[in-house]
Length: 118
Length: 109
Image (cartoon, rainbow over all chains, first blue to last red; front, side, top):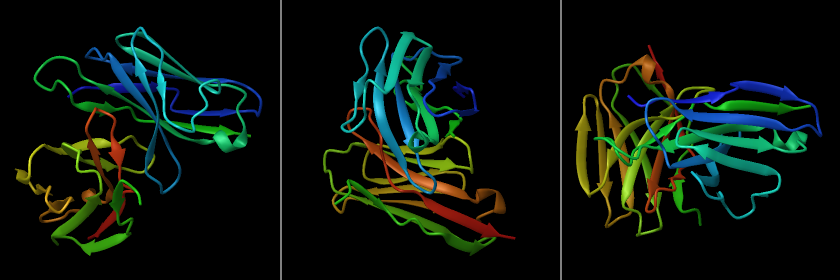
């Protein structure tokens, strides 16, 4: 099956620093990737839609200057949490939509990145 | 009112039981319905994907969609301890998934 990876899987950073999270589709191309945030025992909340070669589309209430998204290629999207604060601590999950093949249109999730801001 | 409602549980059943997980939704425009399984501290894994009203079966899993009632279900037959996880329903029109809160299931040996 299709594989989506995230790096790092876990990161601890100090308040005020920036953290970059990578999302890669390993065996398929994805023009669209999504970034989600999940609090403990809560559902996934869509943060933004990442489109290759264009600006990301952010959901209402998500600060675009704080959560920088770059979709530089058909297999890589990055989320940078700038000037992180403890309230940014969460589980960040990306997903990628397969654009070709029999499973075209299916969405595959990465394993998630646990961010802890101290 | 949330677009997708799902009872968070937790739901605890004995091994071998039939499990029924449900979601209701309010947006009649939703066309695609998914069920994901998420183990602790892992990303969601797609279990079932349906488009139309009716039933879809895959091994021990059956997904049911009733668009007239805006109600979807996932049935797990002969439940196993390895089925213990959080089950999230999700639905979409444009590719953006809207998730339910997730139901935590524990299957006891």
